[in-house]
Length: 129
Image (cartoon, rainbow, N blue to C red):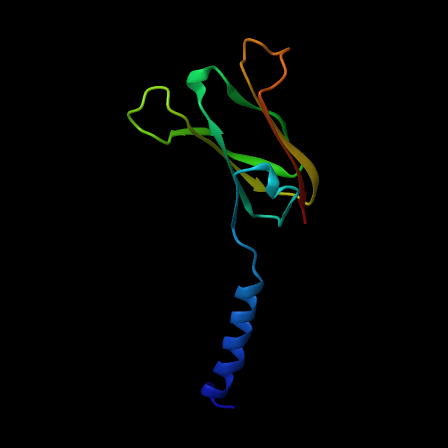
């Protein structure tokens, strides 16, 4: 066979492999995206509205530790730079490292009132395969 005749089937095979590969990053910014199905090696980027100037902070209650690994600590970014007290977003990065199931659960509350009901909750079932 000539090189040109081998090139077409090889090209089609490569295109098929690329089309079936999952996205490397999965971004979630609200509860409606849950439950989540991830593949081993995929990154989960969770971004939630946040405004630490009000005293409310997001705290991870359950990190789905059996299936997710934290890649970085919480990163807060102010949506309106220069505006004192303006809200922004908190972002966490995780990687799916093992097959299984877990829950990613965060609560927003004032740290000095741990017995008070959280103002907001993010609760997401995670399946990694």
